[in-house]
Length: 249
Ligand SMILES: NC(=O)c1ccc[n+]([C@@H]2O[C@H](COP(=O)([O-])OP(=O)(O)OC[C@H]3O[C@@H](n4cnc5c(N)ncnc54)[C@H](OP(=O)(O)O)[C@@H]3O)[C@@H](O)[C@H]2O)c1
Picture 1 (tube, protein in one colour):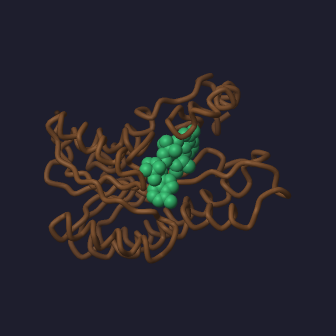
Picture 2 (tube, helix red, strand yellow):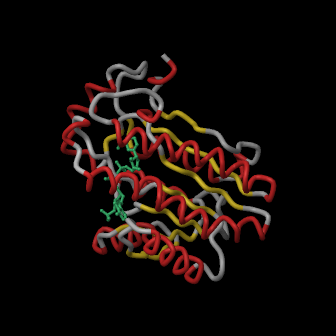
């Protein structure tokens, strides 16, 4: 077990599954006390149990993150559970409505913008000032490679994550002078529980990348863990592609 997160409190949204779960396991293995967030208590408690089995510590905080109020409530519970602070925030929970622009319902547009933009915005507003007061903190946002180029059927999803990536830079400018680093990871197609239904489509999309294959959740979690750690102490405002080279070529 490495000790690079020893003594830290890490709040990870969408940690009951996929990339968030892999990140929770990785940070906990590095010594972080992980606050595991998601809607499904069975999956949340299973992640906490896996962390404890590995010798780490964690709590499950249930939340359905669609509104500003839900984000504020979670932030307050997290600070309370964390003994007065959160040192690392990973804005990973996301939703990806897919389909033609003309078929997108207002509800699908609203939920994408709420989960992918509004909730991270409010969480950072609640958590980053405390980090800034203590002079240290790390925030990692999870975007997507399709925030960087147009992909038919992913317009609102890509646009919402492009907004999140711009927020990454704005927050680096706002909080960076007080010791808070804010970065993004932009994954390419990644096999997770959430994408199991569309894994064949993901493999087709991944074939366009130099790597020629989809990622595992652990490969994305490694980049998130790096940005959350002191190894990335001079990295701020970066949007890091973790897409097998897709957006480079
Ligand atoms: N997989 C990919 O190919 C890929 C590629 C690029 C970017 N990403 C991004 O990576 C992130 C994670 O993706 P994934 O594939 O690992 O997802 P996943 O396996 O479907 O997991 C999604 C997580 O988000 C949580 N979540 C969703 N809506 C929520 C809500 N309203 N309130 C609270 N939690 C909520 C889910 O928890 P519960 O179900 O327990 O609520 C779950 O823990 C997302 O932001 C996604 O956009 C994924």
